[in-house]
Length: 484
Ligand code: TNX
Image 1 (cartoon, rainbow, N blue to C red):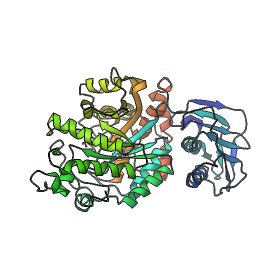
Image 2 (cartoon, protein in one colour; image 1 turned 180 degrees about the vertical axis):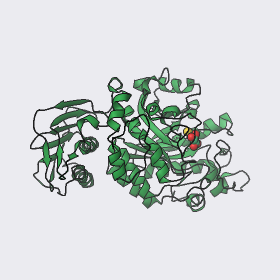
Image 3 (cartoon, rainbow, N blue to C red; image 1 turned 135 degrees about the vertical axis):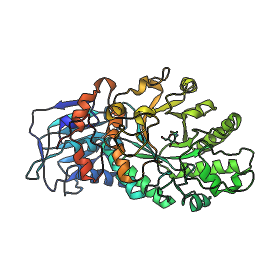
Image 4 (cartoon, rainbow, N blue to C red; image 1 turned 45 degrees about the vertical axis):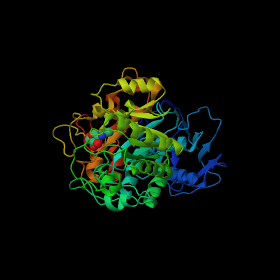
């Protein structure tokens, strides 16, 4: 489109006086400095470059468009990139493939097509890097199940806006969605259950590798969350050996939270936690595993603390770093654990204390990032317990000023969240995410001083062309003067 409509807003843009780069219909792409890089990563990047340019070309040893990995490039941030467009060349440079992914999405957003179908890129030098290293979406595939094809479409949208993390909420009271090979009952039994009126199903380990691979090809990490020790009815339904009585709990399709629990005195419980989190660590591409920890209202405090300790230990023993919902900041957490803030009405004392003792904080304040909340009283799917979230509310907030005592240095980044009790279809899902996901993406990427809602709303007005091209639903927020 143009320099005036980029989202997220880049750090530094220098317009040169040169003519635009006119993309040939079969423009080729070359790579430099890829000797130590996995060939699949190279292939994915070349494919992305060709698609960004609408080119029918191919990989070539010599080409006007070049992707360069340069370990010595100025920036240390693996997602930093430099995009240099001149009349005769386009070069994207980064220290790591993830930086090239970000640079190529910026390039995609710069390509403009004229009526004759000729694509052009304005001459410019963009030097860019993110404010936060973690910009994600937490996606509940449990209350409602979304098949691999829909998750892939979602990943494309995250990628367009430089998001780098897809956190999948894979177990809850209503279902179990990821195969754990040594506990097949979890998905054999609880893969068949779901929230009322919603879809059931599960990802086999093979399906899941397909998701992880597709995301990796876009420079996006996938985090597994198995929610414990509350939100565990699907587990106790499938595995009666988790119950003191040895009797399974009934399947649950409602939308209540906080009634399920685990039993630390039942011998199988520890084995269960170890097994599922080892499997989560093995199957995911992220250095993190999310153990849940929210809303365990029926779990007595001492039991809760013990179970969180077992769960987080299973993660660290598997070589990964635990992530927990904020409630678990009341437990003793391993060094480096990431605490995810969501419940803004709660006293943050434990989260502040955790930050002061070296834990990290991931910001998902519900009134700004819970996109299962409706836009306003008149819009369709979703709920409203955290209030309505019009586009401006998803944009106008600073992660560093959400919790007094948790400042920029303690933050790993931001995540939007999508809970799906009341999100019946993929169409509803995208309607709730667009245009709010680009807002979260900019909150996480662009420096606070450079952000302005009015300016954002003018840029986003041009973006429905991408969503329409992908056949995705979106909400025409009345705060935006949408382009026709
Ligand atoms: C709270 S957010 C939950 C979820 C619900 C969501 C509905 C969090 C950690 N727990 O179990 O689905 O509210 O908005």
